[in-house]
Image 1 (cartoon, rainbow, N blue to C red):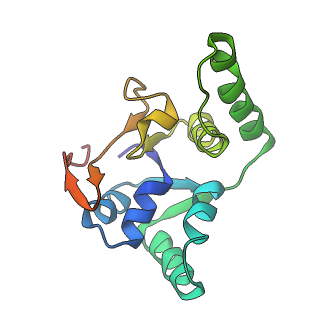
Image 2: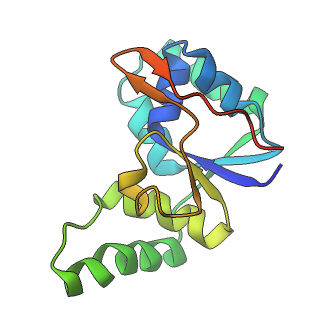
Length: 144
């Protein structure tokens, strides 16, 4: 399957034992996360949990993409571009960095929060399920 980049909420769901997140993580041949995603997850984990999280990423073949100058520039464009011109609320900076990381590598963003990445109308965003207070609904099958 295609190139994907997982958002933090999918990773957090995985560490919480949500099977749909784990299925999603292991369902792609070329998956990655941003270093920002790693930090957002790790700050809520113990040292032992971080070790397990890193092992899970390795087992699923998920690469960690470090922030580069190109990613920084693209994130600045995303955050400052049309949102400043339209006077609308820009995505949070971490989401802009994650979005730029995916954008520059041609990766589909897998998230539960499409609003941080241009909304549901963005064809480069996949929302595999909803998690409402631990209740999982609207589960999509893995793409073929």
